[in-house]
Length: 235
Image 1 (cartoon, one colour):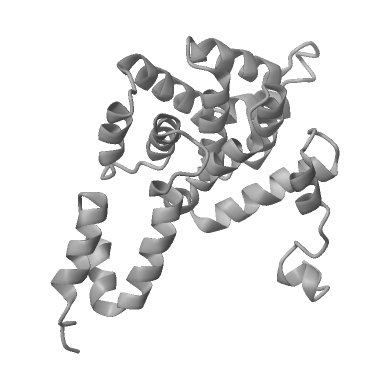
Image 2 (image 1 turned 90 degrees about the vertical axis):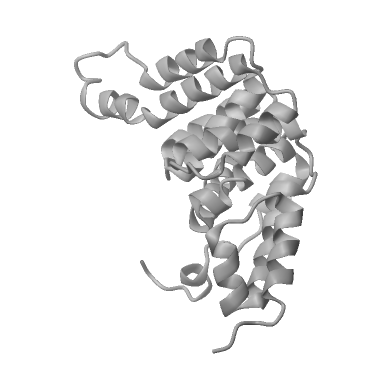
């Protein structure tokens, strides 16, 4: 195999767009320039292109995701957060709420094992109160989006369902929530994003959230269970 003649040019374009290079960019450039192009287009739309979130709010969510996924190399998001007006006080909140979300298993444990001894205990309500207290001066809109994205990364589907309901209760715009959890696709995995969409859709179908018409239309479409549903296969 010969080195692509435009290798330096390809990687220069990636560097110019992002301001940095990562090792996998060069690997894709050598082995499949077409894959690099497709990857670059997808990453651009997920992480760089303006959708509905402000740059500040997008980077707020990104930092929670990076902490949750042990993504140490992506420090450019810290610089982007600060450039967008992010403060040290907000960073403290991001760290605190992410740690709280990562500790959700403690609430599961009590719900699973101790409720017979603690009939008046409501672990989910305790968690939501702790989250609201941890938010400080940061709007719950941002907190809900960041923590929901953490649960996507960690495949915490029960916690994600709880967080989506809380987001609706706090009037988080659906398009903003959708953008926030989509940021988890690369560091948290596309399959996790697929499952997150399933959780959200099932909440809508079950009437547990008051969805807007476009989201209702999406939720009520049949045949969204993948191959098993399409082929009527039994799991």
